[in-house]
Image (tube, rainbow, N blue to C red):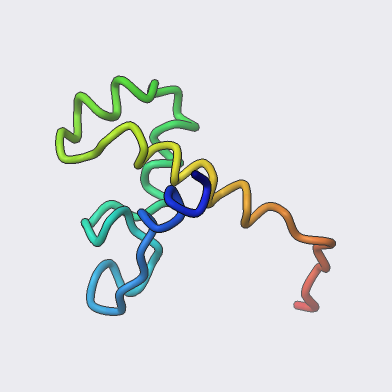
Amino acid sequence: MKNNLLQRITHNPDICHGKPCIRGLRYPVEFILELLSAGMTTQEVLADYDDLEPDDILAVLLFAARLSQVKSIHKLAS
């Protein structure tokens, strides 16, 4: 199931400057995460963006969870 969800996240240099997006649509993962972190519910996001599906939201969350599974974070020298 998780692999199926992650297949919904696509990368195309011609769409949103190559940022990870949902199913090749112009909805970057970061945009959906911003909406959710601002307090919108999944149902509100789906109502506002009718071409999105419930599994798209799950895919965004899974993608973000995978990105956060780093072993360590090092501060870059400035």
